[in-house]
Image (cartoon, rainbow, N blue to C red; front, side, top):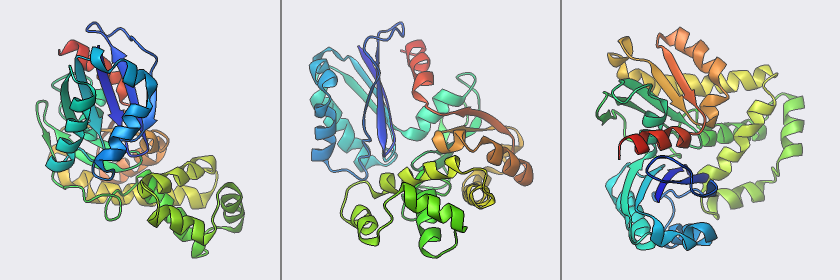
Length: 286
């Protein structure tokens, strides 16, 4: 049994297949497993809480894990150790979530492309057809992550409290969410995964895309992301497309294409959930 796992900070998708790519179990979802944020004890608890994973742990031969927070050595090693302890008979391979986006969006194995993630967090890399190259190391949601769900959540809350929202949008926002100040501070400073908490607010934008305020908010984030991340690869952009993975990118396709025209890069493929493309990639390359 081969487990292919695609994890953001908010949620984690698991799919079990055989060597031919046939699905063996129902697709599973757990809470996100970000080792840069969550301690070892919490990572173990999330995995073991899933009864199906626990029951099949000894049958797993390979784990291909792609996740947010796995791009640096220490968190990567932490999660790899947890997975090896749980799936005792499996060879475990842990890579950062950008590689999942690469494998899921490229049209063929050796295609070169700039690949972006815009989900709970955001990132951007260049894949030369063999290796991934990253010019900016991510410092996490509190400093970076332009155009990510947590970025937009932060902007929405700020605009609400600073009275920058149009009145009708403000009423809709406070009707949908608990915007009491102590409740927000409790979730931001006393609870785990504040980035995921912030990202939950991003859905609001796509429910109100008929508002000029919302459209401008989406475009502002994408312009920042393009300026700070995509345009790091000016030379590469002359010859390769820019692919996008993640829900924020998927629902912002029109705005991304508009800003791509403004800034002079070519938009390629969009993939909301990379895990489907990962199945064919790994079963073809075992």
